[in-house]
Amino acid sequence: MLKGVDKIANRYYNVLQKGVKPMAVSLRLSKEDEALIRSYAALKKISVSEMIRQAVMEKIEDEYDLKAYEQAMAAYKADPVTYSMDEVGEILGLV
Image (tube, rainbow, N blue to C red; front, top):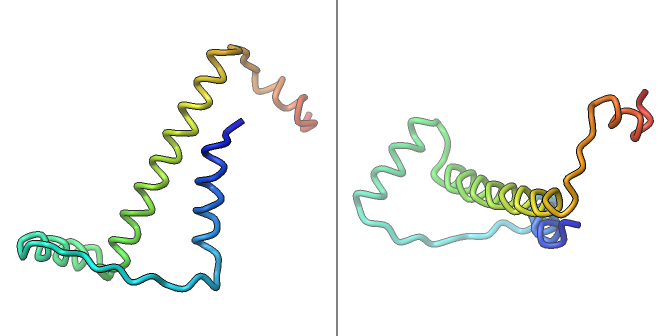
């Protein structure tokens, strides 16, 4: 159903697994950008590395969520069926 999303989720999962070697990244910034980034990281009381890692991971998550939404909406438009909470409970055997 969510083929493209499954690949992204699998990559995301693999990156989070222990045993994956850390990657070093070089980034060229203007002095003004560097000062802003360092100040923001200090304000948040995290390292610049952690702040950049979080920002990138959030971007990936946002794109993953958008892709999942677009695919779910396409599936809904193709077959616009909805279920009540009670029906979902019955389908999942929770009732």
